[in-house]
Amino acid sequence: MKFAWIDLRTVAPPQVEAVVDAAVHARLDGVVAADPALLATLPPTIRKVLLPAGDVGATDQPADLVAIVVTDTDQVDALAEAVRTGRGSGAAVVRVRDDRTLKLACAAAVALPYTVVSFTDPTKIPLEIVIAAADRAPGKLVTEVADLDEARIVLDVLEHGSDGVLLAPADATEVFALARLLQESTPALELATLTVDSVAHNGLGDRVCVDTCSHFEEDEGILVGSYSSGFVLCCSETHPLPYMPTRPFRVNAGALHSYVLGPDNRTNYLSELRSGSTVLAVRADGSTRRVVVGRAKLESRPLLTITAHSAEGVAVSLTVQDDWHVRVLGPGGKVRNVTELQRGDELLGYLATDKRHVGIPIGEFCRES
Image (tube, rainbow, N blue to C red):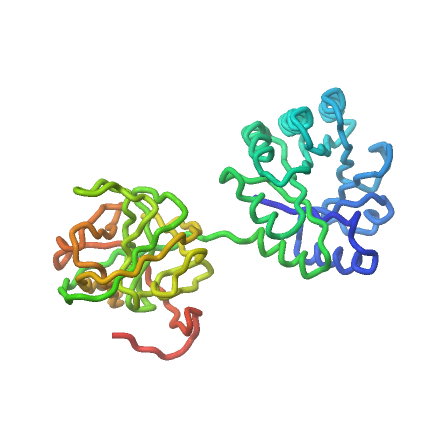
């Protein structure tokens, strides 16, 4: 579980009280301060991290952790020994500016319960090295970030990310924004089994290929449908095809009018997708993740329409390119070529109970056909 610490050491004094209140209200993990008296005012629901300006002992301090700036491996060893003997909390701060301090950060991340790292250079390569070095270590890595944009990047580096981030917010608004960032996850969906009713050949129309910035798994695709009430799981081009190479970043998704399901239960028309848009990648077991669109290709092709229904009788429709190479997924991740679908075949899909206005769920009457 990712977490965040709020750094009060550089927050403007008029903003400190509001920032602390926001951190407590948003249930962030911890607050970092150089003043023990400030930490003493905090409730027990938030971790108190003392990062003193000078040498301060860990005893009789109103802090859960006392973080020590370390400059050599002897200090790391001493902190680790203090943890083993119950005489310290084992929190180190390492300023990474060269190869020596990078190795020191790796050693601390492996040996200590908490390691706070900051980097003088803008590249994330040193952070990747520390994350890799501490991959199976039990301790927590906390990375100092300059702003929310950097926090988002740091939390995703190497697909693992830093365990936590340390941010000095400008005001309470940034605290709440950081809390929302930590909660950005994509919950699993309960997929439905759909039964094909018919497949109709429509003639020429415009369809969209969605090229993402991620590789899809073999049982993964995106949810697309003509109606806001139901979607079909469209397969990515991860499986071998005759006459052309695989393109594991692509989904030949459907006609331009179609809805595609994105994060936060929002939809877009396929025609609206642009470089930088986000959609949900969905696996056959219902697990999801955000993927970034690198390009959306709109081209004229022959189309066909698949109509299907759920066990509850919900109608689902999908219009796609009329070609054997275009595929959808069935139960268990079975790959089905759209031109070979027959009445009674089973597909994987998703049923949405909400009607929509500009992609936003809304409880209103709406009939689609």
